[in-house]
Image (cartoon, rainbow, N blue to C red; front, side):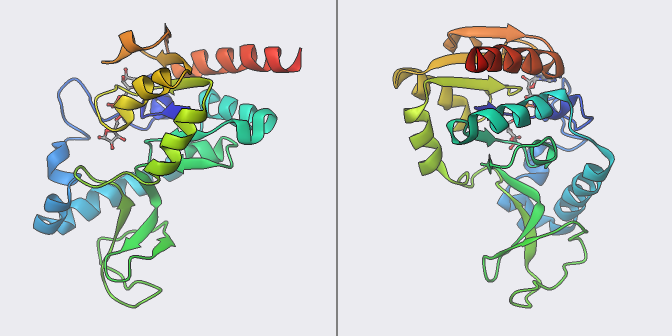
Length: 228
Ligand code: APR
């Protein structure tokens, strides 16, 4: 299962590709690339500090909670990979979440390359608790960087008998390619999204509407089948 920004939209976390092409007032290339960080570290740190602080003001919605219920029943048979850097899946009851684009609540030290759980700001360039260097950056995967755990993801896509994509525009690779790969390996594929994504035609089935409605209804269907 793959999730994107759309699953957190009803919680009040903005999606990336709004109609004006801006992401909370910024062009994506101004804040989400290593080059942007090298050029304007304070701007980039402030941007992610604001997003991290905003997590305290949002709550998981029925879609996150439904996936938590699904994990309770399916256990390891469910592999949840998210492009989201928020922690709403975890707060919605999912215990095993593969954050392929990293996590806002982790800082990554550019000096020692170790991670530290982080809830505060990074704009003042605090010392890394592990090595003492002032090189902490948000532990998020920027454009041009390699998503985390691709080998594991590809393995799970090969093993899957069902691939579900929730709330993602299908605009960003490699995640946008998962549907074709899973389908070629024999999985049935299902899209749950507010509107048809760029790759909607690649799915065996697509349902369109808000995740807070579609996902709980789909989970009820699956659990009805499992428990019958
Ligand atoms: N319910 C379901 N889907 C929704 C909802 C909702 N309430 N609201 C919006 N959507 C859909 C939109 O129709 C869109 O197709 O969610 C999708 C969000 O798309 P994007 O903003 O492009 O987010 P995402 O696909 O997660 O972006 C992928 O791009 O900028 C990078 O690293 C960033 O992880 C991100 C990646």
